Length: 237
Image (cartoon, rainbow, N blue to C red):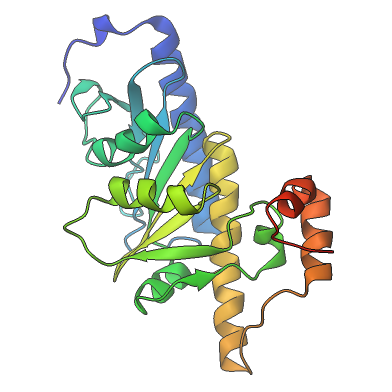
């Protein structure tokens, strides 16, 4: 559905076009790395800076003849202002954007190893060094009660885990949030999926183990998060 795109400024339209190009890059990398397979389900939602608007970016999927993504611009409530396609995830993540200005980006993604963990209805502790060094969040939470909107569930978990990066859609995919734009979030998605793979292998050959504190110090020291980790008591050495 397309409505009056003339209501939108040139800056908003340019931002949406740039986000679409980033989404095309991210989707290509997701496929090349095996981060998505089969249906290729990925839906990015990007906050428009300085506006109560979001851009939803829906890759056409592996069966499409064209890889071009047309941005759909909508209000946080999901009213489409420009573009053809759906903005079904904008109201969910729009709730988060309204209350958490630091959140810039979100993605709904079906990836095989995270999707496998979502089947267990259990939290997934983050134990892969490459992803843990980039966040102080220590786990991915399962969203079981689907009568609770996923956006509200994310906001609830942000109250206890201000660095939250992802929740599981029980028996489905994952909802992930980022604070540095679409490409930064997409890179982190690849690492979380890779970590879920390695942890599953670890469970099969003896059990995935928690970090030694010296390892956490090393990882967070590399990314500049160590001082804040110590302030919160996440490491005590």
